[in-house]
Image (cartoon, rainbow, N blue to C red):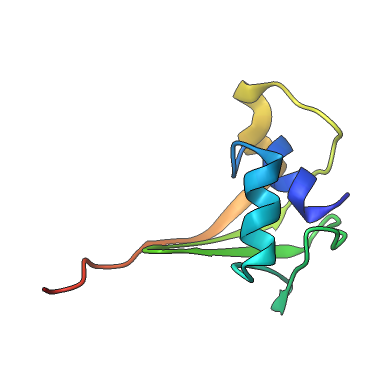
Length: 89
């Protein structure tokens, strides 16, 4: 499955177009390599997302084409979830 679709299906990112933009901004890694939106993701892969003040690392557990919202969290295992401190002004 494409990483942009996986991020949307798993509800890690709400819209596929946003997932595509984030991938193009080089904020997503799959197994330690920067991922383009078309990068394939499979079971066991480690996906790392770096947002402004948030780092999220998950292991892919399943890649279905669709899933109910209340079951989306079953598609991945959170390995790291860090919120970075506020910048001092």
